[in-house]
Image (tube, rainbow, N blue to C red; front, side):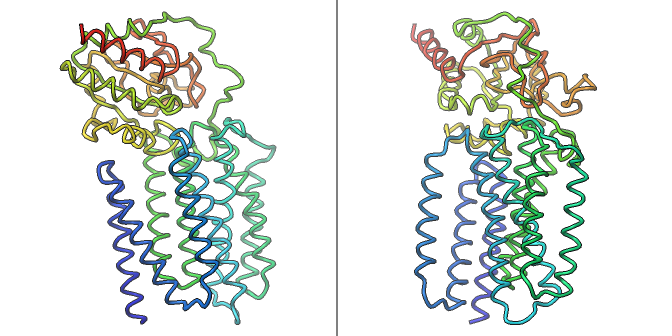
Length: 459
């Protein structure tokens, strides 16, 4: 039985690895999710049978309730709220790891060995930080809290004292692991740490925070795997933790900032305070003006942003692109790594509208093409196309690689207002003479443009 169990866990691990590899491409991501899901199903079934549980009533109830919640969330949560849902799921993963570790400690009939005691402390610490930090991220994304950094007096000093307290209490527990009191004290300190670590991070850095919290949830699961002596949980947790850290690194590189700067830089913007761009004026263009320009364009690069997700305009944007291609226009999509509020947000959004994967180009692959492009159509993007990142040294965006939208012959921007992006930096591109600002809800404006294009092509 032990051999069969280990072989099944090995098969699960292989499924996890291949599934994770397939998630690196939008084309294979759906299949990767399915393969990873099969691996998890195998692991769950083998674990339940191996433990020879007498009564499956609560387990079945949990499966039914959890599956129902997951299915409803997957169908009803809008694409704009997908980052919030990911944040919550990260939190639940961390919270579950903490609870399982505590429950397992209460089941011990003898003192755990030092290695198990260490992983118990780490599981409670990382899992609790993940849980509360993820819900703070959710609150910021959901506008339940202001997205701008919230910094308390002696903020980092408080964090350092809390962490020092965790180390001291954790050491006492490891030397004498007989009472759950120390673990509960660590959980209480980790609660404060989870909150205090995330509140000073602004909305501009949410993609990085989500990636990092995802990594934390994996690490917490791996630590709990050591507590349970469960190999598949160790492997799956380590995979999630490692992939989350790699993704966090990639997000930081995309913004040309260090992780330390993200965590302690306090970059953000309070939308309630208004923006400097509101004091300046630009020439407003209509949907008809935009269509006339698109009709005469031989090449168009579309740059999607969070505003596209807010307006739920991905389907009508795809229809606009199809109409342009029908008349012979070359249409491509430029995807910035941190566009939206979570990694891969724009890829998922456009996949929902059945945009062909070969039309999506990463920043490095398409940036040189803007200079030879007739129209760069920006829909709801801001910081990722802001030229201030190149020259304004006192800007929080300075040094961040951006899409070279300003190099196109004509720049067309569909946006509700001149308000700054998450970073709070006014965008000079709005005031460039070759920029056409089309103000309004993205879905409404794109729908009007589609109707006008159909009329022109039908006449």
